[in-house]
Each structure stands twice: as C-alpha cells, then as structure tokens.
Image (cartoon, rainbow, N blue to C red; front, side, top):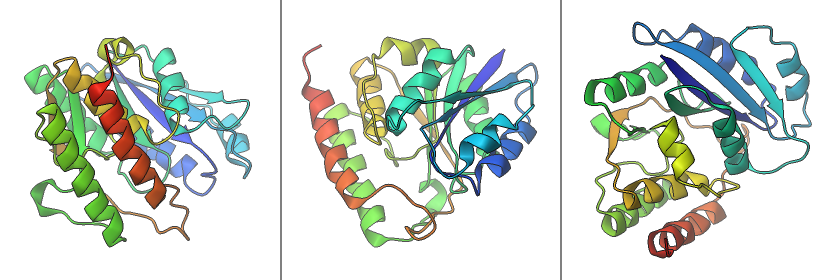
Length: 231
C-alpha cells in the first residue's frame, strides 16, 4: 500500500530540503510506503536547483514551466499520484510532516475517503494574525451551513483524500481556492470528511507567508460557486 505525498513549492529555498527530510523520516502504518511528488511552481530563488540535487529514489520533482498557482500544482501532483491515498503537504515550516502519519492512520481505521487536518481541534489557537483566525472561522461556518458538514478548519492545507476520489472530483482550482473547492465538492458528492488535530507554526508575511486577505474573499466566492454550480 502506498501514500502519495504532494508537496507544492514556490520560492521555498530556506525550507524545502528540511521539509523533504522530515517527510522521508515519517513512519507510516505497517505495510505502507511513501511516494513523494514535489511540484515546483517556477521558483526563482534557487529552490529548483536544490530539488535537482535530491537523490532519494521515492522523491520525484516536477518543474512547472511557468507560475501556474498552488492549486494547479496540486492538480499536477494528483495526476502523477499512484498511491491509494494522496495527501497535500506544504513546502514551508508551518505544518509538521509527522502529522501525515496520523491522517493516514485515521483513514485506515475508519476506511475514510477523506481526512483533513485541523489547527483548532484540542483547543489550539496558533495564529499570528487575528484576521486570519476569524476569516477561517467564518469560511468554515459558511461551508458547514451550505454543505451540511461539521468541519472545524476548512482552510487547513493538510488534506488527505482517496486518490480515486480526488480524480473523480474534476478539480479546477489554480491558486489557494482549491483548498475550498475540494471540501465543497467532496460534500456535494456525498463523502464524509473526518478530521484529526495537526500542529501549526504560522509564518509572518516577512517570513514568507503568501496567502493574503484578498484570498479569503475569493475563497468565499469559491465556496458559493461550487455549492450552487450545476452538476
């Protein structure tokens, strides 16, 4: 059995090799192995050169010819995934790769089609910006009301989904909007989304955080669009 780990990178020279090393060290459930698919979204800071230096046999680097957006990078990773499950892992230091094993264990335990991380389960509140915290709360509330879900953190980056299910959803998101398109399409297709707590160490904008308040407004539109789109 195999878990496909998709890592999307854009100008993450300072963290990409450390994240890869942590992913390689993750111990999965007995009988499970990893394939790691790194999609570089046309980095200009030397990230690509670092990826070319990686020699691990289960790591594959795919280099986009131009900047296509995070969502497009995730979709590229999905097309190359060969595992039973595919999980998204960020290329920076905000999310701990060790949590990937916990998502897989939950999926195995309940035969889940989807397991998301949650940055707030267990009383966690690790946010640098109040606007980010309350923005995520509002987007999660809207998603739950419109989709009949009970999520606690719709915007979390760490999402694990059965690969065959992922491919059936016909995802189209090109940027951060895919994070919100995915849960809505899962719910519209009738899938239950489980959650497990994940650790979170947020970056500041000065430290390289890329998502902006305007992305929250677009996320709200994406949730509405996908909920009421004709199938």
